[in-house]
Image: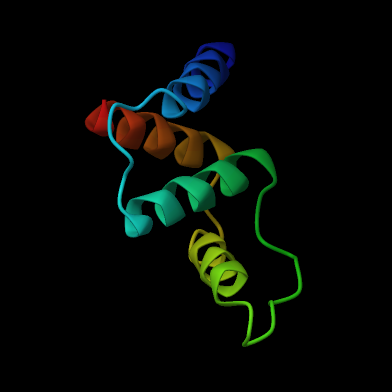
Length: 84
């Protein structure tokens, strides 16, 4: 578990140093996996219709519902690895 958490933290740090900015769909996936790994299932109130960015983030995170923190961490690590 400690190894996975260390790898996850390294991937989070590495995400700030990507050579190229990922597309919006990939950024949403990274956000959702990060939130799922660090917070768990989304229990926040859905943003209003006028908050399109907040709503997209909320939807992406909610799509990860039920995924374990370990699985979310591993997917995040793998996704960052594919972008590097």
